[in-house]
Length: 335
Image (tube, rainbow, N blue to C red):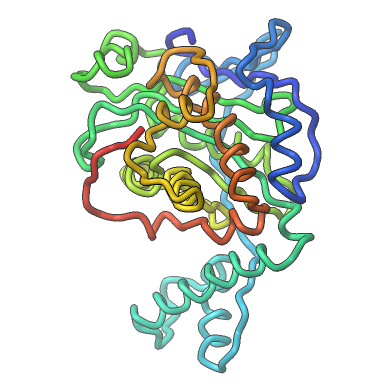
């Protein structure tokens, strides 16, 4: 990848619905490790004004994200909380409005609401067909999400098609002490044409919106997502005063790998991404611990995990989690 640029590339995989994971992924992603020499790219330049190649320029602006999702209201109290919650989401409650709901009740409302969303998607085939699965990976300046910064991010929509990938370096505006891990140096990222996280978030949100189906949900999968990738993203979003869209769910493929080991009666001694690559006998392509290389690898591993587990999209949804579910304590990465 060239320093200071973001690329949306074309993956030659037909776009279609995903009623089940085992059938679709087994047929579609056996060739992900190869590169299409005829793929085109979408490049974004500088940190404020980004433009298409071929003389088309456009300024990206962040747009509000709304949701119409409703939870199941089994009691009068839940119904009251649901109404209040949707008023908040729709922006109709002003700061001066008073309502007697304490923090505990709001927390209960949120848990009920999101639990029902996952249950609804898992039980409803039509909703499940609207789910978009995106694999992602990040590289950082270290393990502490409070003190360190993201320096690279990559994503791939598993349905493929035009502009199905997103990749960029990120300017952390600080020294990169662990270049020996991922090969990303301070000089590569601390440049004016490499976007800072606050510049990148609106573009990242726009990419995901461009891949999701109307009225659908997005499942973002990463290896060790619960303990590493998602908490890091959450910290960066919080620092930039941004929020995750309400239709984002996350899946940790580390959990799936443990499930697979358990189903085989094996001990999960080593379930890093590279260990899984060797277990599935996947050839090594690209450099490990670079975001796009790891995304390409996980895009092959995830379908194989779900095939071994005989999981459908509904099963994957039931294993998903919310950003608020990820732990607050720092844990060692198993990537």
